[in-house]
Image 1: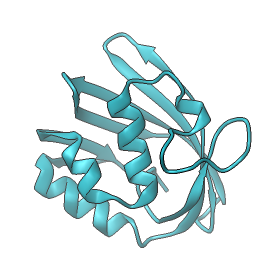
Image 2: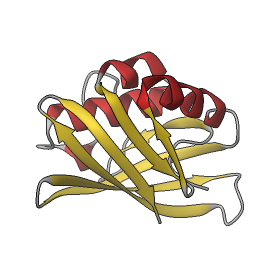
Image 3: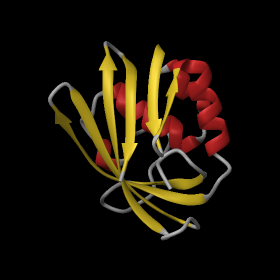
Image 4: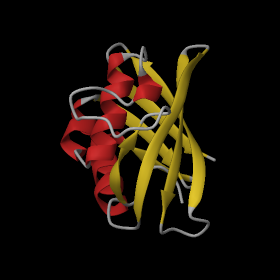
Length: 135
C-alpha cells in the first residue's frame, strides 16, 4: 500500500482534529504552498487539482512503478483512488536539500491497516516536478 491508493476518509493534522478544505492539515503548516495544495488535492480526490499543480513532465514513483507526464499520472491517480478506504494523518514535513519530504500515516482497510509513508517532492518553480512515495 502506498500513498495514492484508495478513497481517503479525511485528513487529520498531527494534533488531531479533522481539517477543513480551506487550510492545509496541521502537519503541513509552513510547507511550500504547492506541496500543501498537492497533498490536499490528493486527499480530496481532486486529480485535476493535482495535475494543475504538476509540471508537464511530472514523474510519480509509487509502489516501485514510475509514471511519467500528466497523462500517466492522471491514470495512476484515478486508478489508485478505488483500491482501499483509509484516513490520512499528516505527521510533518521537512526540507531535505532541494526537496520537501512529507510524512503521513494512513489507517485503513489495506493489508497491515496502518502505514507511515514518505512523500519526497521535487519542485520546479511553483510546480511539482517529481514525487517519490515510499515506506
